[in-house]
Length: 52
Figure (cartoon, rainbow, N blue to C red):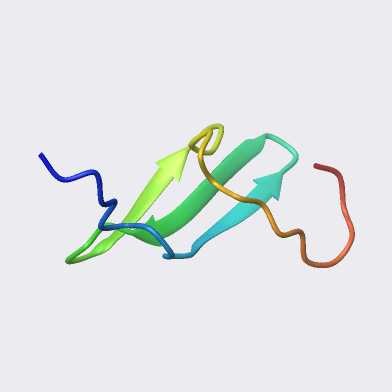
């Protein structure tokens, strides 16, 4: 099995709302929407102001 991550280097956009959070990410052949905390391997780059 290869140790290469085919999703490495892709970008997910996370939206934090008053009632929770969701993120939209590349799901290889389509876009994926996930609700809840982001994957622990995600690297965060905050844009703008707001609570984390």
